[in-house]
Length: 95
Image 1 (cartoon, rainbow, N blue to C red):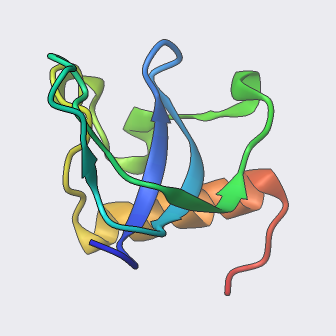
Image 2: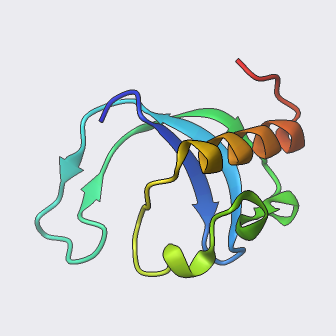
């Protein structure tokens, strides 16, 4: 939904690296078997070097919960922890 907050996850690194906000409606591509749904994101804070990304487990997100999904819902506590850590590592101030 437009305005929803997101934590960006790099699967190969099993790490979180950014914060974003959903910027538009979801779009469906019926010709795709995997990842058929997409939506535009507006970056809020991004750690540009993935080697500096934060291990997902450090912010309470376990890679096993993400492996088979393109997204998962986080609790407010998980989002807040990830947002604080990502902003600090990216050198951003909290809004």
